[in-house]
Image 1: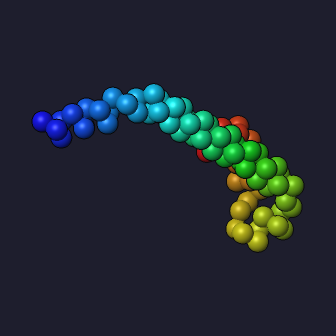
Image 2 (image 1 turned 60 degrees about the horizontal axis):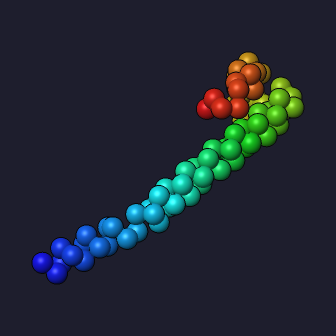
Length: 76
């Protein structure tokens, strides 16, 4: 009986804290998403600037580079 009281008390008390934690996790996921989008924008911008010779160094054609840079920032 004592164990049941402790368990129910444990789950009853931090309910508000749990909601706040889930909001923090959601904000953290949102921040990670925005960071990823910014990284894609930067990388695709740099890829656009590379010459044929630079692209050949890592075995990428100009067509592949154009296909990648034509994607929207939210597209993987």
